[in-house]
Length: 318
Ligand code: APR
Image (cartoon, rainbow, N blue to C red; front, top):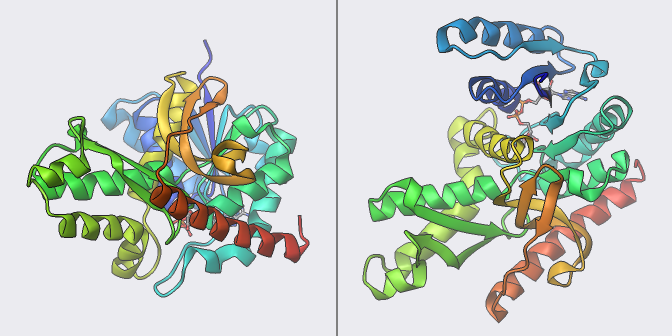
């Protein structure tokens, strides 16, 4: 059986890390595509030169030509500009909408059957643009945010509790921005919900509230430290988990930006919700029960995403 093909559009910080992870996990052959001359070629060469040492048989190539998307089973898109200190994800909207339009048209032309994962920010809007441009079925166009936000939440919890990250589960829903909704009731340590752990005295409510806020600000915390760009290791790892679930039909339950068509009372909007990812793409959108407070926060987050979609609509470029 021929190897699967993974195309990475954007060979910057996240793109390079995606290529390394996809190679090391032998998910398939990898093509890096970027407008920067020499960058995808250089990174691909550097990576294949690591393969004899690490012992992985993935073929990695780099190109400045979108035609190299041809035959891709999965396309992961990071093309765009990242945040600098003081910028919100939303500040990227003007530049990145144009880039996603160009990339989306190329994907529709060269890789019409691909499963597309968008990482470019502002995420929920960029994945909406991607779907508008490609006109792919919604189950084949998803956004990566919830896995990352949940991973940050899980790490902060594991650190606070002094337990393995493997035993912490967490759910973050809503848009990938300040209004995201970390769901405390549905997050657990070894199956014990966080509110019970507060009752048991393992963590104070105050500390838990701090962790929730740190999760919301997780991206900004890293931007502030790095100064010249935004996070890339954890975003790449998160998108790879989604790609792997698709390629191996693992049917993992992962929070992703998916197109809602009435679920949670929302229509025609991409926003973070738990989904099942398998060989058919987004195979199921899971509607969990939200209490009034959670629903209020979720609706507010959806409102923020819709406002940004309106900004893009008014730009009249797609
Ligand atoms: N086609 C292909 N690549 C492009 C295009 C385009 N039209 N426009 C820009 N790029 C490339 C840039 O040349 C750069 O190499 O996208 C790459 C982006 O890489 P970085 O600047 O290193 O950004 P990165 O940290 O990888 O983040 C990418 O993901 O998380 C989001 O907010 C982040 O929007 C940003 C994106």
